[in-house]
Image 1: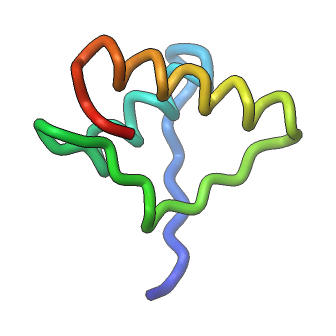
Image 2: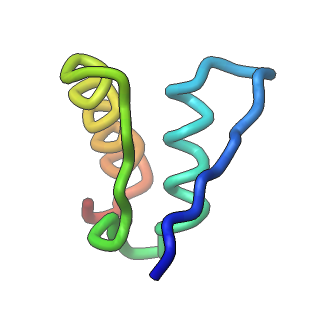
Image 3: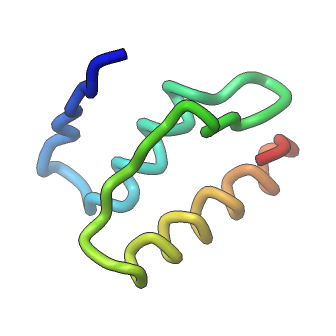
Length: 65
């Protein structure tokens, strides 16, 4: 499968845009399955923060991550 870049815009912070896009693209009513996703971030801290936000959203909506 070819790599597909997604440009999310400038209207909100990038982390919020990325979390929302990942949930819309890979989320189901029961789970958030990121097994097919590759996300490039500028550093380790950004990756940890992205994971933290995804966990928060998954817990709030009652989904498995």
